[in-house]
Length: 147
Ligand SMILES: [Zn+2]
Image 1 (cartoon, rainbow, N blue to C red):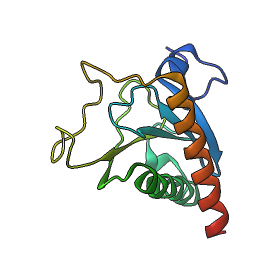
Image 2: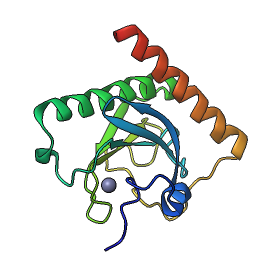
Image 3: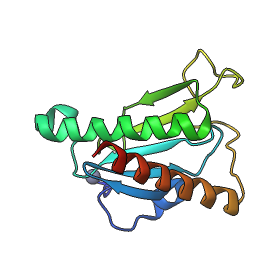
Image 4: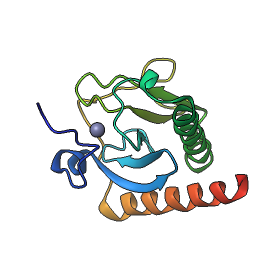
């Protein structure tokens, strides 16, 4: 069996796909390398759960609260008109949610986002790092406000 890339402290597969933004009480936030959808992130649960029904009610509440907070920050930062959420994990079976900011200008408005687009958009390292920092600051700011 392949090792879980979300459980490993360092994973080449994970770092080829995404970069860590920050820790939240029940999860870890990663910015997706492919920025076809500016601000696309993954929120992965802190512990390994294959299915959300394996979490206790408290863990599930915590996890989805984190998802909601990240969605709020994404909406403000990337002027999203809608956040799309996707949970499947047939292969990476560690509960994680893809959060994808959508706008009406995107060709996939009104349709599911492209999970593995044929032409991914890799922004330059400076822009990418800027997005990581803005996200981290936005999430920290919101976390303080709601405490
Ligand atoms: Zn795992």
